[in-house]
Image (cartoon, rainbow, N blue to C red; front, side):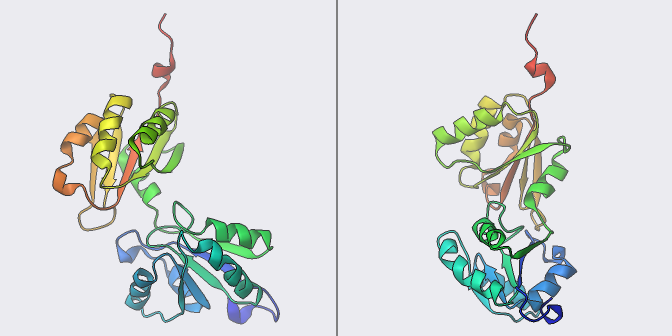
Amino acid sequence: MTDSKPPGAAGTLYLVATPIGNLEDITQRALRVLREVSVVAAEDTRHTRRLLERFGISVPVVSLFEHNERARIPGLVRRLHAGEDVAVVTDAGSPGISDPGYPLVRAAVAEGLRVESLPGPSAVIAALQVSGLPTDAFVFAGFLPVRSGARRRKLEELHQRRETVVAFESPHRIAACLADLEEIWGERPVALARELTKLHEQVLRGTAREVRAALAPEKRKGEMVLVLGGRTREEGRRPE
């Protein structure tokens, strides 16, 4: 990394995946890079400092979140041009995937700077793997809309997809979302993954009605990932 760069060479922007729950999931490469970079740009500096302290890493940390990301970009790009390596981390999972990171990556690419991804934990992939639904093709829909009308329109749009659909939902809206799915998705299979890799991990599978009935009120908390079965060929056939 920094020590092996020729004089005057620009730094590298590293997108470092961090655990979505279980700290044992962090990679050795991620730990090495976090130790060696000049600065870590973090979605939540307090959360990231706790993670770094857990692994005995001492490195400067600056904030990079939704409301300051664009203001931070010029300074981070200057540091990269000056030869400093910069790591980007979010609170959990991979930067830029429904989390801060994309605008900085776009700016770095436009400046001809090197960008590297350090793959690791992903709630999207973990939920898809354990869902029991087809994994050969899928659509990631990000966070579903907050407002009921917009959420229903989005679900109706996704209902036409043949691929498996993966989406994030807030624990505060999961009951209402499952009610919408019960009406729109009907008897299609769905899965709800909650608190993935954590102590209270739970995966519910069945129809939207069955999942809704199985999700106890006291369990409506933590990170929620929905995996929804796509439209089948049988559904697409016209009656003769």
